Length: 286
Image (cartoon, rainbow, N blue to C red; front, side):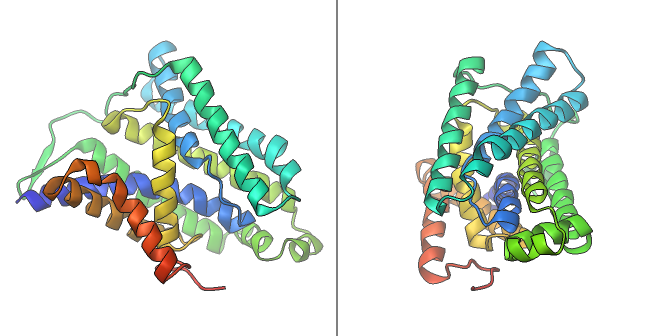
């Protein structure tokens, strides 16, 4: 029953990628910008939680919330002082700005926390559950559960709430949205803050299971981007399907071939979808 264990591990890993992809989708839904610093928000969330928990001895739940608050402020400042001033420039310029910001965040994290990996205790104790011969870590259930709640909440927010519809309107036609009285700048600011908060939440919940260090953000960001493109940029449920697919494919590749090849799975999937169906599996062609 090795395949069951690989499937369970793959779903957990895939949900981590889904959380990263959701951050890309939020900003894309509002600005149509690809924020390549999203992976660093995940890294920063995990390391900030470690700081609040181990250095300031806050309860784990409070360290969780404090990390989200700090990284949200980072996302807010990034939009307010960098992206906003470059918004009138070309897409290439904006991409370079996000890449530069990710490098800065990585450098700051290495300066503060060094190169060692850090961990947090699991959200709930106890031995792993055995299901069909496969060991299921309790933290994996936290990751899957929180991810599903976030996806459902975002879908409702963007399709049912006034602010969610206003944010989507800004992406479709910012000039018309502004003429209708929608504060476009505030919506963009909200999207970056929300995306950073989401990344931080993802970083905190995966740290007990997979550790966190200063350079984890780049690879997580790349795989999250592959998931976002495969599922269709801006599509939350598409990201869920794509993330689970890539996670299971990686796990099967590591189990039956070699763990050295598993990081290539997301990149191969990204290249394949760009050649065959650039709008993604669940995206709409423009």
